[in-house]
Length: 233
Image 1 (cartoon, rainbow, N blue to C red):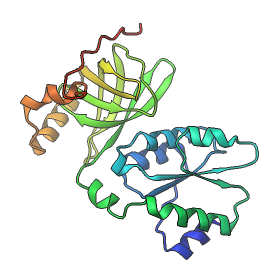
Image 2: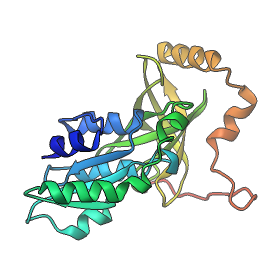
Image 3: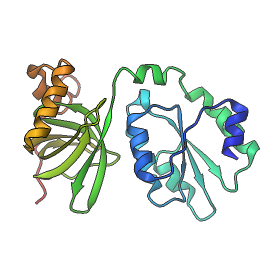
């Protein structure tokens, strides 16, 4: 039914069949809209990650639900429109036409100027994905779908944007806020990963003088914010 609607509207599409693939697609590619089947286990994590994207990269989110899925949970996860199963072509077409005003044609053009990647953080409760907003030789600034619990010695891995090199590292949270943003300072990294990171930064012309500043919490109202965080043991 969706494919029939896309064909009629002239919409280009990509189908992602798993949660990990969907998370990678949302974090590294740029799309005007995202359709998520909320009846699939953990599908809400994809919607929440999309909601955490910067405004210019944030897709219009359609949530598909059956009779057993509460409508409120879909909107709570960040959905803009709800598609009810069994899908009706007229309803799908109406919803997509209504959403066109929110789909900026320049989303992809603007987003291509910067490449993002996804980091996977190993918490005691499981692995949490987060968008990498900035990478320095000292650490990374991140944004997750929900607030992150500050920890010491957190293990993580992320792909250097534009490469096939995966960086494995451990680090300490140096700040975190309720919006899911955080800064992690590297405390341990394999020599090979350190080399790959340094070469990547050199190719991008990163300045060492900006490294620490880019890792700190953003200014609020023009003034620096001092974060006093009690680390969870």
